[in-house]
Amino acid sequence: MNPDEMLSRDARVMRSSLIRQLTGLVNQPHVISFAAGSPNAQTFPHEKLRQILHDLVERERGHVFQYSVTRGNAELIQAVCERDRSLKGVESTPAETLLASGSQQGLDFIARVLLDPGDAVFVETPSFIGAMSSFENFRAKLFAVECDEDGMDLGHLARRIAEARSQGHPCKLIYVVPNFQNPAGTVWSQARRRALCDLSRQAGIVVLEDDAYGELYFDGVDPQALAPIKSCADSGHVIYVSTFSKILAPGLRVAWMHGPAEIIQRIEYCKETGDLCTPTLSQRLVLEFLERGWMPAQAALARDFYTAKARTMQTALREHFSGLARWRAARGGLFQWLDLPEGIDALGLLHDSLEQDQVAFIPGGPFFAEAGRSNALRLSFSNVRDENIDIGLSRLSRRIRQALA
Image (cartoon, rainbow, N blue to C red; front, top):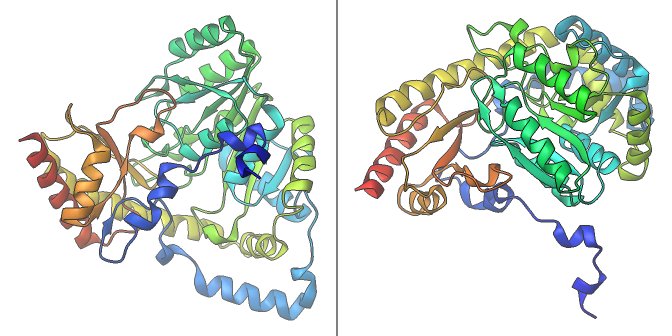
C-alpha cells in the first residue's frame, strides 16, 4: 500500500513552515539565536501562578481537572469581553466570543469554517507564516497586498480584489496584523484601519484581525493609537483574535476571538471535533489572575522587559548595521525586520552564519505569500541576552560585508 494514495487532497498540500523546520538547527545551546519568536520566561509570573494553582486545587479539588464547555469558561468569557471593552474599545457579547487553545488554533478553526478550495485570502506583504499555512492547508488562494509604514495599501488591495474576482476566486477573507506585526513590526495608522473596515464591508469580505502583540507596546507609544479595527463603528464583519500568551505565559494556551454570533457558533461546532474544550485548568488560572487584579502590572512588566531588549538591539543595529541595512525601529512586539542590500540571499546567509559564526535568524522569504524578497530577515530580541545581542549582530554584520565583498 502506498501511504500517499491514502491521503486526502487537503493533507497532500500540507507543509511544515520553514521556521518549524529550522527550529532544531537554530536553537542549539552554542548558537546566538535571533530566530525564536517566543516570550521570555523571565517575564512569566511564576510565583503568582503557583499561588493560584495551590489555591484552586485546595478549594476545588478535582473540578479544575475536569472537562470544560466547548465555547469556554463563561466567567472568563465575560471577563474577556469586559476587559476588551474597557482596554481596547471592542464591544462584544459572550454570544460573539469563544476561547481557543492559543490564537493559532483560533486562526485554523476560522479558516476551516470560512474557506473552500480556491477562495481568495488577502494578506499583508510580508505576513505571518502560521496564518498563511492554515489558509493554504484548506487550499485557499493567497493574494499578497503591498504595505507601507501605515499598513496595507488599500488601493493595491482593491486592485487585487478585482483581480481575484476576474479569475473566478470568491473573495472571503482579509488577514491583517495591525499592531507590531510578525514579522515586519508594522503598526497601522488609525485612518488606515477605519478605511479597511469601510472597504471590506462594502466589498462583502470578512476581516480577520490578529492582535497577538497589541499590549506589548514600547515607551513612547500611545496605546490609544493601537485601538483595533474591531473597535471601529460598523465592524460586525470583523473577526478579532487575541491571546494571553505574550503578556502572561504561552504554555497556558488561552486565546479568544470576537466575531459575528453565527460564525462563532460554527467555530464552536468545529472546536467540538477539534479539541472539545480549551483546558479547564488554564482557563481558571487566567480567570483568577484577572479577578485578583494582577494583569495590568503583569502586562506593564512585560512591556518594560521588551522595551529594554528592543533598546539594546537598536543600539547594536546602529553600531553594526548603519549603512549596511534598512530598518524601522520596532515600536512593540518581539521582532525587528531588516532589508539587506540587493544580491544578499538571506537563506544562504543563514547557513554560512550558523556554520561559521554560530548566529541564527529567520530568512524573510517564507513570510511572503507570493514571490518575496530574498534579501530580508527577521530578528527576535526576546530571548537573547543583552551582551549576545551586540556580539551576534557584530558577527552577522561582518558576514554580510564579506558576502558583499
